Image (cartoon, rainbow, N blue to C red; front, side, top):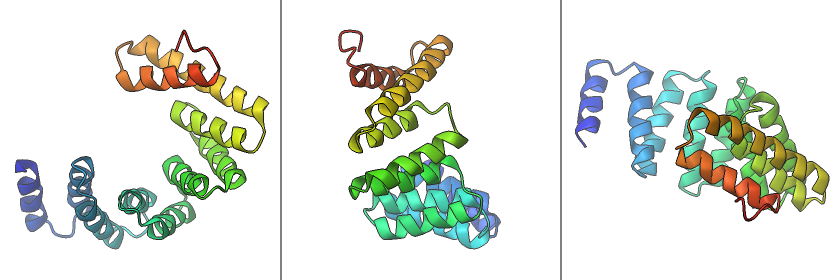
Length: 179
C-alpha cells in the first residue's frame, strides 16, 4: 500500500511520464488487482501508443480479468508494433483455451523462435503439438525445455520455479521417478 501511495505521488509530480503508470500497473498486477492494473496499463498505452510492451501488459491484465476479446486485441496490437515473445505466447494461450491447437502451436513456435530459452514456452509448445498428434515434435519441445532448465539449475539450483518446470517436463517425458 505504501508503494502505491508513493507511485501515486510520482504520478502527481509527472502525470505524463508512462514509467510511473507502468510501475503502478505492475504493483496492482502482482497484488491481483487486475482492474486497477488494466487502468494503469491503459494509461501507458495512451502515453506510449507505439510500445509493444505496454500493449502486452494491458493484454495480460485483461486476460486475468477474463476479458479475452480485449486481451486478444491488446496482444494483436503489440505484435503489430513489433511484438515480443510474451504477446505471441499469450495469443497462443488464448487459441489453446479455445481448442484451436494448430493455431496455438503456430503461435508458441513463433514465440519460441524469438525466445528459445523459455522452458515454459517450450512446454506449452509441446502440449499444443500433442493435441494435434505431433508427438515426436512434442517430445522434442519437452526435451529442449528440459535442456534449458538444466542450464538454469546449473546457475541457480534453488529456483523453485525452474525446479517445478523441470519436474513437469520430466513427467511429460515419462521420466516420472526423476520428476
